[in-house]
Length: 364
Image: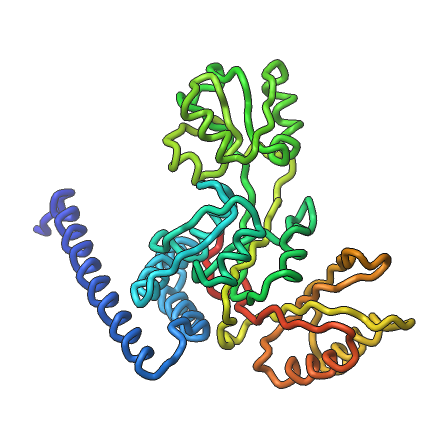
């Protein structure tokens, strides 16, 4: 007669598996540190985007859709970033305070192992990176509803930094408070933008409750942590950071709200095989100048991902153009096309080439 398997036996096996996983993680960390030393000796970059992409592709193939893919990517993203950062700890400047969506985007990209430094403005983040007081910075650059973040675009004109990555973060607004009970909330606080993006929900569900605009979603979360009568509209990271309870998740009026963040550094990474190149261009003062740029890109078979114009301060009716190209500067057609743009544009700056957001980072 076949013996029935008991719950304690299965739990014992789970304990063995967990211990084996831990030992393998420790071994992997040791291997990563060894690679870091070997790269130091050869002066090679510690970040190899192509290698990381190959790891994800191999693991997802071996998984055969058995383990949930989204979770698998998230787990290995944390493992890979932790091992990479063990070679040299990364410090990341971000638009603060703590638990803002920019902070959350940083955690999504770098994992929890990095050291995060809160800054008061986007300008400060650029300055920290340029002066090498931090290795990386992260700033918002555009929102799917609100459009471009012009303070970020303007900062590229003032600071010499490179884009080395991007993050797309779905923006979900959560109503939180100390108790988790909506009846305890007498005031709803948040940044003016989330309050506007949740206006219809608040009108329908909390019509008699006044709203209070504050400096940031994190400032609102801090208020809620101190006052049980205050509810905050804040990020999921704010809930953990300030030990709050979720009242209602996802109260934004329009779903699909996503913000794109840029990772700043002093060097762009090598090719991953799935990249984007960003440029800042000034056009000659002649008819058809923009069409001339687009014709060059088309002739070289270069796909244009985005174009955004920005007026030049102090020069009326003069504009600079921020352009995203699909491909890496190391690719022959991108290099050749950009070589021509240097000659026909009044201003040319390569802002960086970096992996597309879905090639390395886990899904949201």
